Structures are given as C-alpha cells and as structure tokens.
Length: 58
Image 1: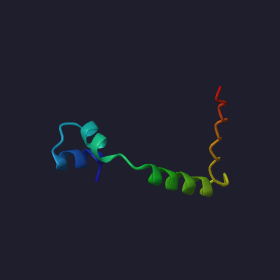
Image 2 (image 1 turned 180 degrees about the vertical axis):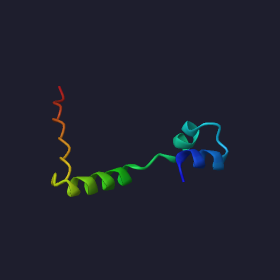
Image 3 (image 1 turned 90 degrees about the horizontal axis):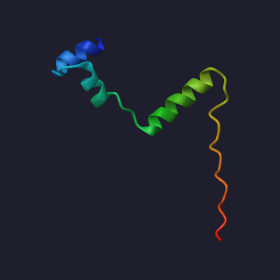
Image 4 (image 1 turned 90 degrees about the vertical axis):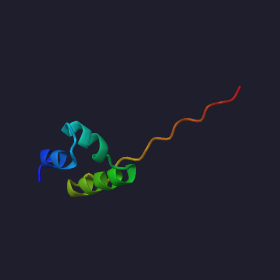
C-alpha cells in the first residue's frame, strides 16, 4: 500500500493532510529508533546532553 493509497482510502484531499495527522511519532520512539540505528552502524550510542553552566545569582 502506498501513501497515496492511504490518502484515498481515508478520503483526504491531499497526502499532506494524511501525513500531518498520522506521521508523528513521540520522543521515546524517536530515541529508540536513533539508538537502534546507532548500534547498527557502530557509533556506540548517542552523545550525552551537555549540562548547562550554573548561573550565579547577584
């Protein structure tokens, strides 16, 4: 089934409507996918977030 088939089946006037409604994934799913890709290409995982420096209060 192609994206155009899905669009027609759902009755949307354009594929962009279908994509905007159904193509979003949550952050956890994105991280899981990124980690899987990283492990397959031997990157050793994703870099850790840098901690922001603490601000001094005057």
